[in-house]
Structure formats: C-alpha cells, structure tokens
Image (tube, rainbow over all chains, first blue to last red; front, side):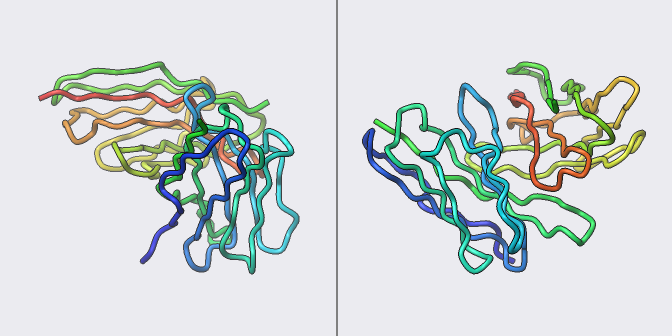
Length: 115
Length: 113
C-alpha cells in the first residue's frame, strides 16, 4: 500500500519568507510525527499528533514553527519568517498505536534550503 | 533525560567484513530500542527493534541485543555487502513515551568491493 508522502520534496526559500510543508500519513494511522534532520543537530523530534488529543509540541524550536492536522489525516508544518538555521530535511512519520507495534513509518522528507 | 550515543562514522569496510556499530543509551525505566537505516536518496526505514531486556532484534542478517546491564544495543552483521552502505541510526522510545523517538547522530557505513 501507499506509504507516507511528503511535499514538496525540495524547497528553496529566501530568509524571512514563510513556508508550508505537507505530510500525508498512511491511511488509518492515527499518530503523526514531525522530525527535523540537520547537520548540526542530527534527528530531532518536533511535534506529535494522536487522534483528537492535543498535540505534543515539546520539540518545536521556536514560536515561528507551528503544525496542524486537519481531519485527523493530512498535516502541515508551517515555518514563519524562515532563518538560515531552519535549513534541514523535515521528516514526517506515522504509526498505528493500539496495534502493539508503535512502529513509525517515515516519509522521504522535504529538503528545505533557506538562502 | 533520555539520550542515545552511537559511534561516529564513517565506518569503511571491505565486502564480507564483520560489522559492529556501537550504541549506548540513557533512559529511565524500560525503553524500546530500534535501529533505523537510511539508504542513499531514500527515507528512514526500520531495520530491527527490541522491546525488553535480553531481546534480540534481527533482520536482513543484522542483529542487535538489548543489554540493560550495559545500556547498549550494538548493531552487528557477520558479512557486509556493498548494498549495506547507508546511514544507520540507533533510537529509543522512552517508557510510556509513545509520542516520539530519540535518535543517535547516525553512523555512515561505506562498504567497498
């Protein structure tokens, strides 16, 4: 079946602009995660959605970062007033808690470059 | 807090050599442990996992044993292939922490014919 998809695959933006990154989880997966992979920081957790519960935003690095998940499916990560240190690969993952596995399935990522 | 430390790369091996990538962790309670692999140009894939002490995860010839006494989860393979060239990430899911994975920095493996 279809895996986690993300768009765009690459995004180049100028410093100060806003960007939106999209994630389509695996159908039926109730949990959705965003991570960031950067050279200096490795793989960092950003935010987690589970069903209708309040999201865990503990990993968001600043208030310029926000995310929403509409209808319990697609998620959008928004970065406002982008900075060069935001350049990274943004990874989305989904999982199906309650089925005993909690395995997270990752998308291919969006490579963000802030110039 | 929770953290994962893995050996720095790159690790360069000849085909059919023995591979060990060290991973140690710091966590309270009984985390679940994972190895993920990222092949060139591809996304992260789960390679193997172990959910309790002394469990051995295995897949594609790779193995790792959950050692609580040494807080380690070292990845091993008896005979590597060129196709194993990738970046390997050790990760933990904290006890009761369904909501995130804590990753190590990753270890790049290059296997030459």
